[in-house]
Length: 320
Image 1 (cartoon, helix red, strand yellow):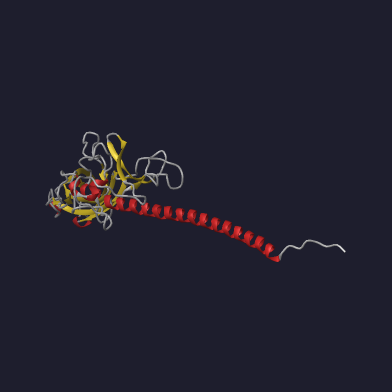
Image 2 (image 1 turned 90 degrees about the vertical axis):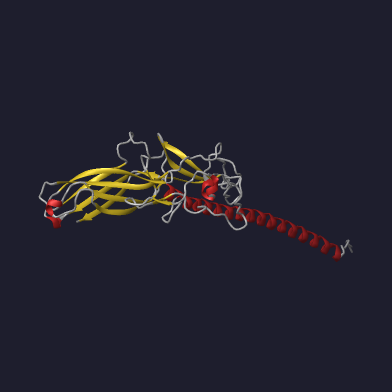
């Protein structure tokens, strides 16, 4: 009769418990690693979303339907006020950043237009982040706590017509590779030419066919914080009591170097009669015919290589 060596049952249970313990340890390690990676990615996702929100906020501080520095002030006096740094962000954060910025002011008739720096700031920081004390400029931070820059870029000689709002990503360095180290930016044209077509209806006056009527259009806009304008007079030939003409702004470049294109935002067009229509019972020379408000929007710069922005096209009608 053969006999064998029997292992104690408790010894087998020890091996089983050890194996299970090792498996649980390995499993928990994997879970912890995955949780760390997922958490780390989630944190960067949130910072990335916040960064996009910051860039959008900066753009609204520059150009928006209801105001913004470019909309109110027009072309800045200087595009790099914080030399040797290039960022313009400090101007949006506090009027005190540049002492030369003008107050919000009214031009009076005939333009009746407002221009200048409105209020104390265009860009507000979150509660607890604000610092209203010099030295200036202060920074506006992205989701990673790095400064968001606003840079004016020269597109055509001699004009700076592009604005780039840029975050340098998670590493705070220009360029970079990887989903979070790459720069996050918004680039757009902030100045555009204007093409205006005027439809002139004087059917009630009984003007003869072939009569030439001169009408001056003045585009009123802010430039260096003050109200300025460009004028252009066109001749409208009357046929059946009406006629039309097209105005192209800017006027006579490059002889007139004051802003060859026009800053985006709410702008005014004033129409003045330059032909005496008194013999037909109409208005006299230099009579204000009408004024209109137009909104010149910014223009996305998405192509590569960049193409100049299309002209803003507007149609207006005057009935007398």
